[in-house]
Amino acid sequence: MLRTLTLALCLGTMATPVFAESFLERMAQQAAEKMAQKAADSVMNGGGSSSDGGAKNRETSDDPQAGQVLKPKPRATTTAAPPAPAPTAAPGVKAKKAPPPGVYPGTIAVSADIKAKKDAFDEFGKVRCSDCEGGYSYDSWTQIFFNGELAGEYNGWAKKLGNLKVGERLTWKGKASKGTLTVVSDSPVEGFRCKQLTYRLDKPNASAERPGLVCWGKLNEYSSNDSWVIVY
Image (cartoon, rainbow, N blue to C red; front, side):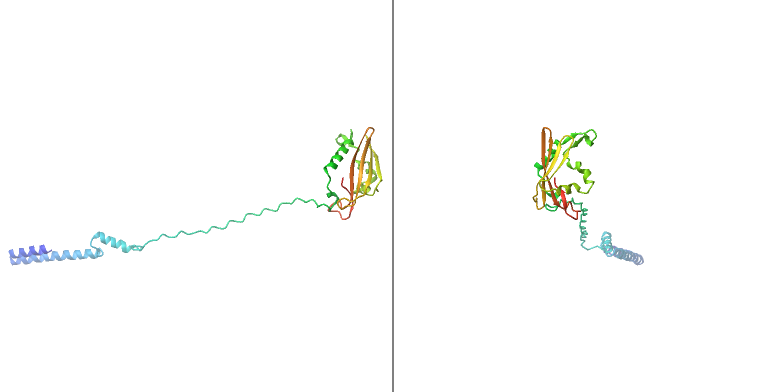
């Protein structure tokens, strides 16, 4: 601008007074217009020194988060739900326990030796039979020879044996052998009043025996009264 004014002054000294005055007025008017335009541009640009600076200022003023230090938001913590309780298994059906010894005569232990003698006695009394179930009958099954006498009485065979006195006997005739049952003693067993028996089968040229036992007490848990019970 100073150059323009200097040049104008120089021209003014060289030109005529009227021309110089007109020229200087135009120069001054142009300079004033330029200054006004520059001031207006400065105001429109937000007072920045350049268009880029003004844009930056506008962006900064328009951004609500400008000048703030952004911190990462904490992640939402989810509390794990406690595990569901395991389903309770339905109670199983408990196996029925055998009554303890001394409750019923049937709980008296039978030794393996006595079981073996009983099996051997039945084998000795085995007889082939064409009209029998399985093709065999047994002279050792003493009770079947007294079924007519018992007439279907409940627990009648055990009662008949228990009512025998020591030394008394029963006899029967099988298909292949003769049988006898004798009460040999009357002694308690495991706290029960019992009678010891001897079963015997005789064939023309052979014989076999086995022990027997009948005791006084309740037959089972459904019995309300004591009675004679066959143990073996």
